[in-house]
Amino acid sequence: MQKNNIPFIDYPKIDAEGYEMPCLIGAKETLIKIKIIQFN
Image (cartoon, rainbow, N blue to C red; front, side):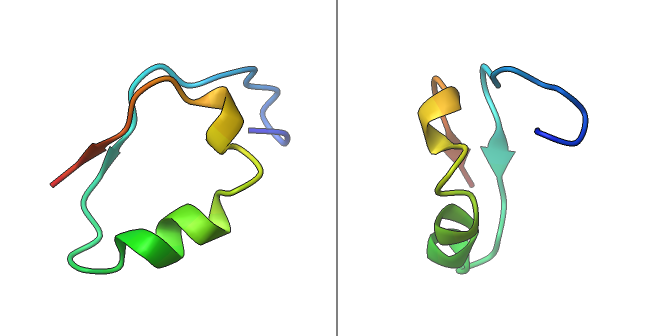
């Protein structure tokens, strides 16, 4: 988001096949800029 100057994300979809928590931990700085997250 910083590299491409994206201020926020409305609706990301995460399909990490059991690795959702590591994805969220890696994105912890950007989570405050996301409105809704869908997990599959």
